[in-house]
Image (cartoon, rainbow, N blue to C red; front, side, top):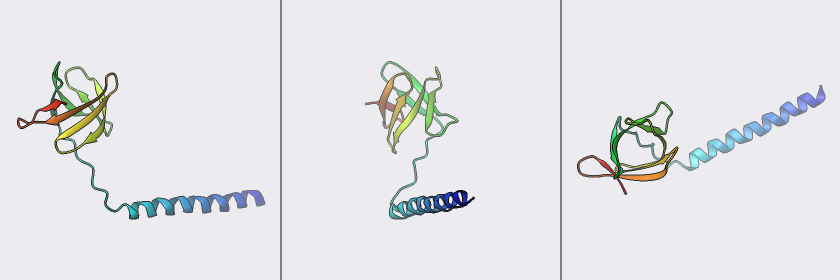
Length: 104
């Protein structure tokens, strides 16, 4: 019984320390900005194809309407999106004046 109580006390102290550390880190990084919100649809042109990217059910993921190729969003700004395709690798698209995102 003594071992169980000691383990619980040690575990409680360790857990409290981790929570405190995580809280301190969040407070110290108060300059963090809110993540960009992905538009409902993004028309992209890759050069060999043109399609529409749509947010997936899984956060941080998109897929092509035309063939269901899926990708993880690596970076997103107001005029640039970087995606890592599940089957094709990383591509960067930049928005032009016609609101079409073209591959760089």
